[in-house]
Length: 315
Image 1 (cartoon, rainbow, N blue to C red):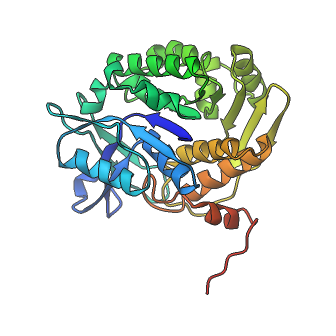
Image 2 (image 1 turned 60 degrees about the horizontal axis):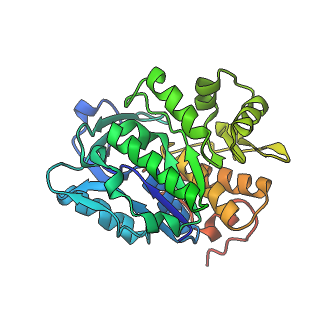
């Protein structure tokens, strides 16, 4: 297994029309979840990936498992909760701006994810464990599970990748900051957005941010800079990598997860730091071209064509 990740995936209802949600009457059903997004994106890039969670033993939980399994991700460790429901998300769309997000996830099945849901051997046999700050924010039980997963990965010398993925609808800055900083000291790869890094460290210079995380103990830092691309560094070097210009995007949700998947794919394939950053920027950019959280993630050949490294043959 190349990567194992875990966290909450919800059923996503995306309105077929723009404007206030009160006037939306028809919706397209899909799924949304940062960790499953990364898992699906990595699978499309040719990697063997496992995702686990706790979902309700209801039709929505079965739908989530079906979709993710259908993308080639292993879901054999997903727990079906007999007592609690699967979480839901509704989007509210306006023209070419980030959608508003409404969560219905309080007391969801995944908020009761706990250390007993972890499979030691499942984590042990992976090359990378990918975690996010969202799971840390769900509940004290889920937070304990993240810490336990990190403990297992460290003991078994599994690389740990961490995307802070701040969600202020789940917890406050005051609650999040010390926990996210503590996790940052325990991981090998950190993938913050520039605004998240500024919130955590109180500085906004990518080079300074990178040095601070490296001093904490991270081995690799990739700072997302939006349309400007990213700044990547390790113990030996650091550099900016230009992003891709998208004149008209459909949906920015999932772009950060695509970035994470592209970067981890580069690491797994033995690419250089710069090449991994280029891959990350490309996958993140392509995610914005399609409506939906995970629908726009490309295959390897598609991303190579997008980057101009392969020629597209249309007929």
